[in-house]
Amino acid sequence: MKEKLKLLPDKPGCYLMKNKDGVIIYVGKAKNLKRRVNSYFNKIHTGKTKVLVSQITDFEYMITNSETESLILEINLIKRYNPKYNILLKDDKTYPYIVLTNDKYPSLKIIRSKSRKKIKGKVFGPFPGVYSAKNTVNLINRIYPLKKCEKLKKKVCLYYHIGECLGYCEKEISNAQIDEMITDITKILNGDYKFLTKELEEKMNIASQNLEYEKALEFKNLISDIENTISKQIIVSNIKYNFDVFGFYEKENFLAIETVFIRDGVVIGQMNKIITDYVDKNDTYLRYIIDFYDKFPLPKKIITNDIEGIDGLENILSVPVQVPQKGDIKKILNMANVNAEVSSKEKIERIRKDDNIRMESINELKNILGLNKLERIELFDNSHLFGTYYVGAMVVFKDFLPDKNEYRKYKIDAKTKDDLTAMKEVIYRRYQKALVEKTVLPDLIIVDGGILQINATKEILNSLKLDIPLIGLKKDKSHKTSKLVLENLMEIDIKNKNLFVYLYKMQEEVHRFAITYHRNIKNKGMLRSVLEDVPGIGEKRRKILLKKYTSLNKIKSASIDELAEVIPREVAESLLKFLKEND
Image 1 (tube, rainbow, N blue to C red):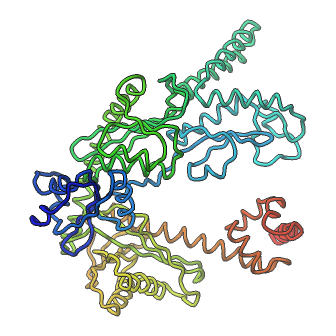
Image 2 (image 1 turned 30 degrees about the horizontal axis):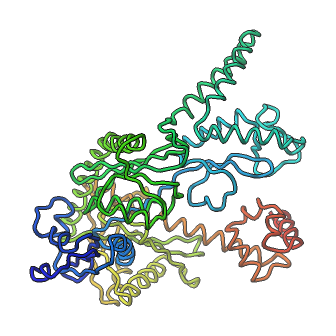
Image 3 (image 1 turned 90 degrees about the vertical axis):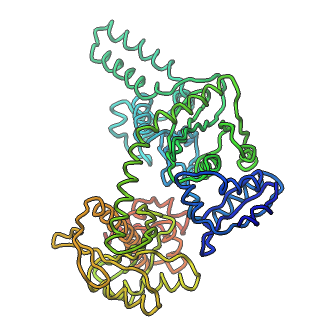
């Protein structure tokens, strides 16, 4: 290693750290490979970096032409090798947007960012949470009589009679009236609401002068709701374009990143992310921003702190990246950094406490089972309906935390009629494939059940010549997890409360995953069997309908016009008639 370190070049590039088994456990980038890689071995480290360095037995490197190229290469290598010490920054959580549709009769919708491309209309947000977005939509719908129903009805409904709809289904509404509403709503969602409160105050005063006190109180409450819901947006700049600001705060082994959304000079929302498992602060900060825009739309500009490698960010995202030195935008960045510190303190303490409990639970299970290593656990469960639509599921937990990218679903042979045969098929398919593809094996397998399930799993593992620790989670008569069943079929009560909670959550997660997959398969199976009896629908049209609609209810709620987009109109009419007659 020492001789190899001496030969490192003073050039930009990527380095790949390996453990004693030759497995790549970390990928990093560097402006200067010699200086960066040597820093792992000539400095004192703490936390995750210390653990990483203790496991490095070899490394390799790749030279690039520039620091930007090294950042791009690093991203690709991490995706390819999924190294243990490169954290996955992708977050399943998506944030809501409000859409003002550009239909003939517009309406407000709340959407998640993943489906934005399908929406036609003006998009506002993201909002910090669904609750905030719903409150805003409900408030605007109370003030402006937009279309409330998904499809126009034949007669006016309650919304028309209470003044929250113009009766688009029966009345002739002028384009000027609609355009005026769109202009006002656009202003409000962009943070300019003062004109509205001024109008409402005038109406409140007139109602009060006319002794219409109940009406005046309504206007007063409405003004109060606007102040509480929309006025939380803070005007921070005269710059009238969209930009996002990324502040951060580091303490011990915790990195807090605060994202602030500025739209037309107004703070419309912010979000905070605490990252605990990271090796390099700069790399993590950069990767967080890059991954962030996998699911969020790019603004006109991105504002960041000045760190090594920031130049490459602009080339990768293809939008200007600014590191402000003074002025309003610098103040906003400072505000983001302060918010990252303030909002993270309580969360960091909670995470530290949770991490301690989690590690204690892992050590408790290691002691019970006599294991030296317990990083990856794979759990299995089956689901069926009276012996039909059998499916299997596997979930993966790493250090007692779910890794949803590793979850797998298994459609089981239709001839299978019992749980044990189904379990054997799933176990065989999972580990036979792992052996062929030489993918990572778990440190522990957990099955749902007792002696029968343990024996069935052991039979398959033995046939594959695999020696993987195995336990079962047995439930009592009340269907509650109560005991661990070891490979030797000995049963152990779970006395540690925290360990019990973690194992129970794991068991519930694999059960949820299996049930969800089973419901999807069942719905498609029922839908397919019904479609087989409808005149004019053959295999080709069945496949088209199955792809677009996953259940009978979705087809029933579809209009003839919607169905006619994928099948002939007369067949669509025949289908809906058939479903109605055979409900």
